[in-house]
Image 1: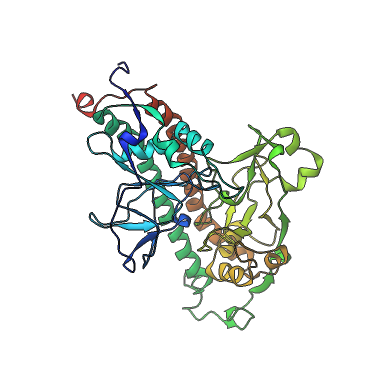
Image 2 (image 1 turned 135 degrees about the horizontal axis):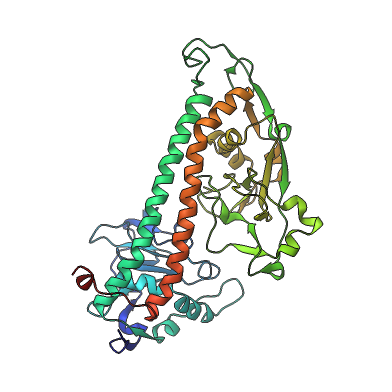
Length: 431
């Protein structure tokens, strides 16, 4: 198959930029703020109902492209999917809204075009304005010339790429379900105190003795400790851009723990050289298997990441950046128990209550070391760990599968969008 049927067109011929929509001031409608877009994520999972005063307007299927720094560079581009069929929503004034031109393009193809490296490069290079407030220029994008496949091929390209996205989203939902299961087990054991006893009963229901403590009633024999008593805490190192390299040891930063308290690798991970990572002064920042990493700064308005704590899966592959803390357990505490209790509502609520800052909330070293925790007998912690370990391991495998799927998606996307790789039409493939 040749590219003769791909026509050179300007983007304004196939994309309606910031399409006109009617939404009266004072109308309550669904708002998608910039904070609702995740980096390099097609899905929009949250919105707020509020009164419309101003902002970009859109419908389902439209692509929202962040035009301002650093949101554009960070990959904040998503496709609207939270509206009813005839509903109009609104959002940040810093969105450029992209919509299909009927008969010339499809919304799904436009989304993948907007996240392709060539499109992003043009958008980023078009940015003008004062430092920290630079914006992509709509007219530059409108007049950019590309080679455009016919509608049928656009649909097939989007279908192939969407299949990767759907699998990734399905995996994310599986992990949310698994995390809910672990939370249910944790609450049963360590909030309701219905952990199994040696005689086959559950502790509190079978009359297990409770005693008073600083955190309320706890089973007799349990202790209340501060985190500093059972674990070693280490702040991260302040790496600078000049220290980054193309490969080597991954730098763990704020993006590497998600809202489920999972350690994840991302498309924007940075590296430092093996030589720098293994310098003597960096030794205390190198992460080992089963180290816990806690987010110390939250840049989101909803504060849904502050204090979230994930577990490192491998030794000597990662190094700790600033604003992320490393927690290394002692022999007195089980790591899976500690991860769970640090991600509990009580601990996360405490960290939010003591957080500092206005635009960016953060906690300091003493806030973290001061965290009060229940310390059950080692036998109970080990029993809990054995029960949830297989779930945590499955979640880790799913995250690793998603990493591979994302790599395949990002490798294939520019090749399909440019025509370097062609796909057969669905009708031909079904023969």
